[in-house]
Image 1 (tube, rainbow, N blue to C red):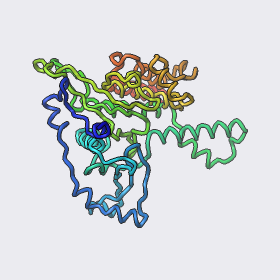
Image 2: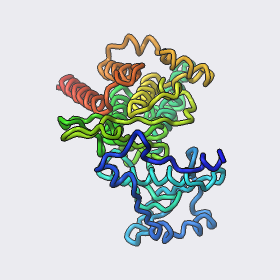
Image 3: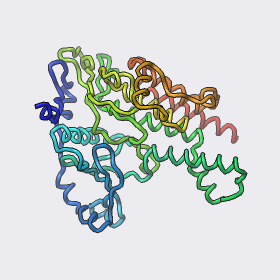
Image 4: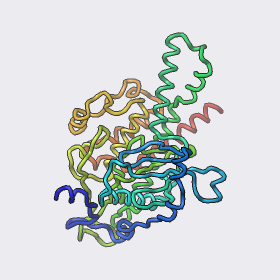
Length: 375
């Protein structure tokens, strides 16, 4: 039946496309660690109300639980337990999306910009605990604090509520901090795209091996002051066309399709339901830069259907004149990369590593300029 077929996991390989030999070794295999997951008596913690649900994504709930490792229990070290929400069915398709999440988390262990995984079993897993919330919450706090400060100043309350005013000042992001956040966003995605990447006969990267497919401000979480990319259950693996591999290189990269692309933060090809590649992540990263720059969500005042049509037509979110005309080095750098990420044709968008390197250089430039002023 149609319901039965929709519940099946999507095969990695088909008549047209196959995993490269080196990537097939890990794309097709997972390593559940169920004992590690079940040794933690988190159910008792829930019953005693020492832990409660922290939040959720579309697929899973998140619970803060204490690490069961004896050396860390006394220090009350928390880990993030993710469990599938009750509204979803236990199907092969859903099971496989969380297997992919675990596989990718394991492959990215070497990156300091990607969350670590500690254990996984079925649809559940233990991950690094976010001590500082998400990038979305950081930007929201900034917006609220900035708005409060502007309202107080406009009403002549500058000298009043000094304690609250100081708290607001601590939440407001200056342009340098915003540039640093944008760089961390790009660096994390670059690590993600470069892991086990496909390469041509010259050894140059021709395609990412893994595409996140859901890049938003909620997917970057603050762990000890570092933004880390997480949540890979929507990710897709890039393959090569069969019989296209040349001497010394992988074959021609083979894209993929996703049948449901909601919301307003995706690329033109996603809403047109065309072939997708790593460049969908790059486009969505441009939306994050937009939010960092403007304190707005892309198309936040537009109907979803209208926004999707506008994106496919080539329109982009409105940018204030203060951002468009700014000569500030940090703003100029973010604005330039935002527009590059927003290129309509996927092939015209840069790779995430290019964006990360560019923003890194601009951060260093701003640092030097600040030191020169001090000197």
